[in-house]
Amino acid sequence: MLGLLLICGIIGLLVLVLKHLIDKKAYKRRIQRSDAELWSRVAEIIDRPTNTSQECHEPARAAWQTTETPQERERPPVRQHAKPELDKFLDVKRKTQVVVLDVETNGLSGESSVLSCSAIKCEIDPSTYEMNELGRFDRYYYPVEPFDPSAIAVNGLTGDAIANRRGDASYPKHFTEDPGFEQFCAGVVRFVAHNISFDAQFIPFVGRKKKLCTMITNMDIVAVAFLRRKNQWKWPTLSETASHYGISVSRSDLHSSMTDTEITAEIFGKMLHAARLG
Image (cartoon, rainbow, N blue to C red; front, side, top):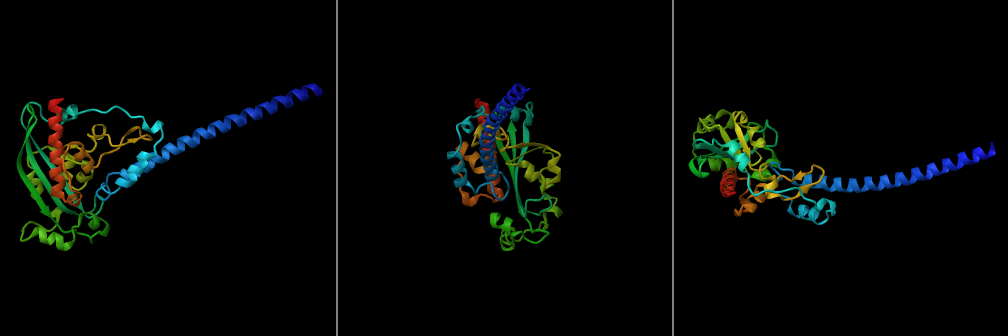
């Protein structure tokens, strides 16, 4: 009986030792995983594209990239062009009209007022991918609600700035009361923007049309940084995407809706050119 108890005691002790070793190893794995997930989360927060912060965190992003672990340096495949998306977006049988657009708003909510709306209408020949400009739209509006200081700090569209840009214009003071942009887009069913899901919140008729996002489409082409937790490339900012395609951008001009539209249109043109060569 005593021998049986002794054997049981030894077995129990071995079980406890083994459990301790297993728990210790699991703890180390959790710590390593937590560190990797933490840096991925930091990268996401730093680079999450919004209308107010997407161009403001280059030093923090550089610090993240220099402290990544060997596992985080693993990269998914990249590609040279977006021909499949472009062919799906365009009408491959005839010339296609496309509107490239950007809005500046009095906040990030879809309920916020549009302060400026700019667009460039183009026609694209699907056989050559050549893009010809047809017209422009560029208007400024006052918000229905009080000005949001955080939004104005980014786009600079104060009441005085809007008044100066409107000049003696006779179009409505509020975007929701102005049919001008919808009339400008009459007959067009394809729209392009950088982070177009944001812009489409403020333009209901665009939400029902065919859309191409130069941000999402260029994730694995620009390949700025790899978000390990999501196992995908980071959404590239407008300036990062422009830089990839060799387009010169002045940071002082960013968040002007027409300047951002011009940059996006140039990016789109470079994408068409890369697809044609590819």
